[in-house]
Image (tube, helix red, strand yellow):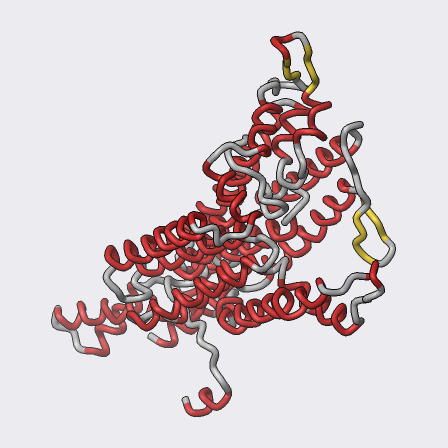
Length: 475
């Protein structure tokens, strides 16, 4: 039997799939041996017949090699590059409008780019990172998920709470220059802000490490969620970003409970968790709002969510004149005065980063805006479908969290773009199109490509424990 399995595995080039294939074959042969023995055969004859029934090991191995080899989703890669180029054209055309305000953005040294150039720069960086993430085995990321997540949270905390507040106290206009040591430290930890979204895929690995635990694993998971939400909020009105991350982590935890990674009563636990994270924040915010404990900006934000808001009314006013193709016009004073939607953009939209869909609809027409939404939605749907098809539960949970992060941001940004929600400064973005979080969008897609790459290679469960040399020697 072992000789047969060895010869078969020699035909499978993907080494990481050998253990799963070997275990599956060994189990199948052992079952057949037991069946043969029950029919009156001795052990040696039963094993010989069971192995012969498996067929030629070379032919079977070649067939399994085709199934278990890493795969590349070329269509998605081409689509992602196409979306980036298309977005660059849109940004370039919008930058040429007389009503647009295009400020130079410094990237490296003295190199300054306009908005369109900066977007294209981010697309190129994003595609490079996407391909890099594709080359990285997502199971290796999960193996060191706790270490990386802790490092990310600590770095972002240091950047925001330890140094940002101190830097704010210095004002060059009054002769108080920022000490170089503060600038160096703040710059050293600056990577943590753009990377905070990585808490979503990392949390899948953390949950997988708790597989088999009961309430102890559940409590530790909830602590990770609470700490991640508090840290992601930061000190610069990042509640929107933190909310999206927390929702993704909660969904991952829900799937983990459903898959019995954490062995607790499913319905009761999931109901209690979602009730806690829904009811408690609402009650707390309502109490703080009624007792005027919130800051003025937070009070205005709460009012704008549930009532009229200037940003919402301006967007609705602009969209009322949108046509299917080309720019439209908005009528005032009973139709006596009409103003082009193209001319209204600069006065009605304060942040181009939040309102890319609105600007596209106002300038090029609703058809193009709908086409952009459809293409991005197709990429997100592909991600969900790909993760649903993977055999490995870790990949499924990690991929679901990543695509949910993109989907929630896309949906909430559309609500803002259609005047249903107020703007959230620069935290809202439409994946792959907004001149914000472009690199993060491509990085998430790269994780999905990595999961797709190994969708048929890995078994349902794999070992991601970190083994030290001493443990290996003992074993």
